[in-house]
Length: 182
Image (tube, rainbow, N blue to C red; front, top):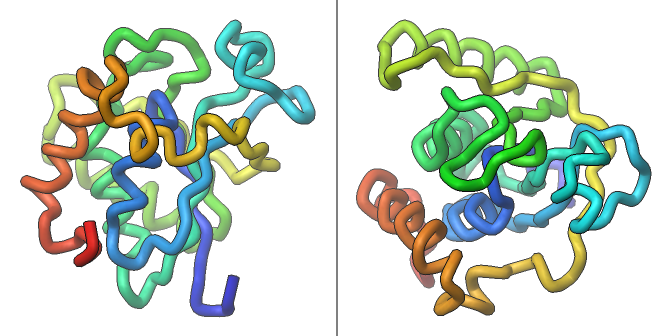
């Protein structure tokens, strides 16, 4: 990572969805699926899914803020998941699916707080945003088979029913931000 790159860590349901969306954004250099915000070192998928580790499924993005701002990443994040449901995204239920912005800098915290306040005041959703805003703890990469999951398994049922509609929403709403080769 060079000095011009920054890190963003976001949790908003299944990490396959977030990864598939953010890897298409111009300025996002890498996306890593993993676990964040729990109390167990080196969690694995089975333990996280059972809700015993306190971790959320999350993605860690390395991005170039000159090409895609942190605010823009958060606007995409809020557009592709429901930030008003606690511990749930669609049929995925449990604390591992909670909505969290894990900030790495005070500037990122301030941007996130301002955006949450702005979006809540606009009444974009039927309820208030419940997305947690927390300092970024240690991030644990998920198992290799979770990385680039949608890209490797586009025909898998969950990918067709849950991930694909999020990508369609991204292409419709944020078309100008998608990498040219996507």
